[in-house]
Amino acid sequence: MPFTAITYDIKPGYEDEIAEVFARFRRVSDPVVRNAAGEDVGRVLGTALFIKDATMVRFIEYEGDLAEVARYMAVQPGVREVEERLVPYLSAPRDTATVEGFAATFAKNTMRCLSQFFAPRG
Image 1 (cartoon, one colour):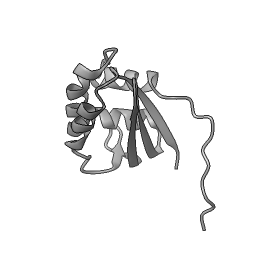
Image 2 (tube, helix red, strand yellow):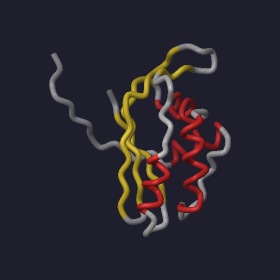
Image 3 (cartoon, one colour):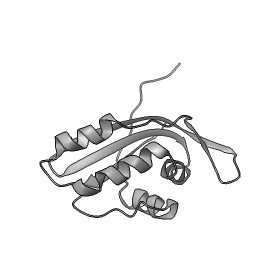
């Protein structure tokens, strides 16, 4: 299962306030990612969030197409709430009010993956 990492440019010194934003995060009710036709096209398996100084990174473990995962996340109520509550702590605005804006911001802030290693399964 692949991972991706999404960066957020934040104002330094607000780690506790941002932690509080995420302490109230509402997880998705269904991890299954569906496309516009309602077909299952992936899954969000897990997420993790890290913060230090002026950088925050969200790691996402997923199955399927990353662009579909971004579109799915764009309409999740908990994700929408977090994006709105983060606005005062961002050092650069993020256009996440629409699905298209969220998907474009997601793609723009996706870090380049250099390697992923997994323990042998079986």
